[in-house]
Length: 288
Image (cartoon, rainbow, N blue to C red; front, side, top):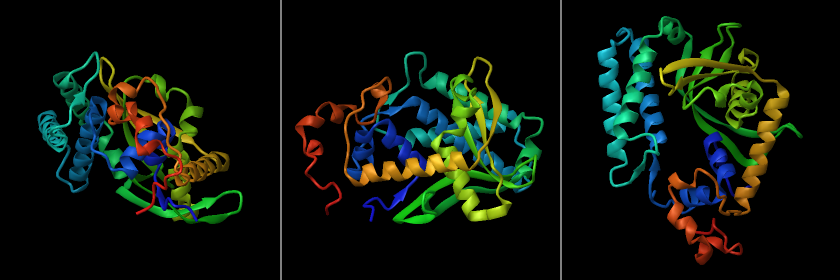
């Protein structure tokens, strides 16, 4: 039976990017040494957009640009307060003021969408909690003691078929990361949430995965990125999750140097990893 009992798309992606960062975060529960500014910006926009969607669904009307800015500033202040005492790495071409300006622009662009009301009417549930057995597609059986969990931004009705599909809001620096449909189809989040929705809703589930991406371009804008997934995409994602969970359970954790290291929350710990018990492969990291 797996020593890892729950896996989410974000946790699995963290492990695949850097197993040592996953270890420090999920096993040692180490305090963050720093946080990337893009995460602060993305979280602020996500909180603001969801707050606006909640308000519109409660029939309070679509906020004005001024109200949208106020909502964004509240979310921004909350994000900074939650990370008080932790240095924020804004990047070479950004700072706190510029990042807040971009966040406000994205939230105001969201409320200015001409079809915002229609988009919100399609939403069936916000912040859908996913907690289902992780099914092995090779056997059709649940992996013993292993569950797929997470919070899906929204579950909505497909405008094409009326069936239920996952919807996730994202922010991105450019369109390039979202320009290849195959790459989007093969994202772990796409396949796993599609599998979960199929497991939860059966024939009522769509094969689509929808992303609504706030582009942090010179003129901020929002773009639909919708992809069709089939059983091969879901199979790939489920098998990936099972293999990664196996590596987690085995306690495998090693540094993975790359361009994102500069803003890594555990960079200082990583630099001395080889001198600490974290590098001892004989040590059971799950032992009480």
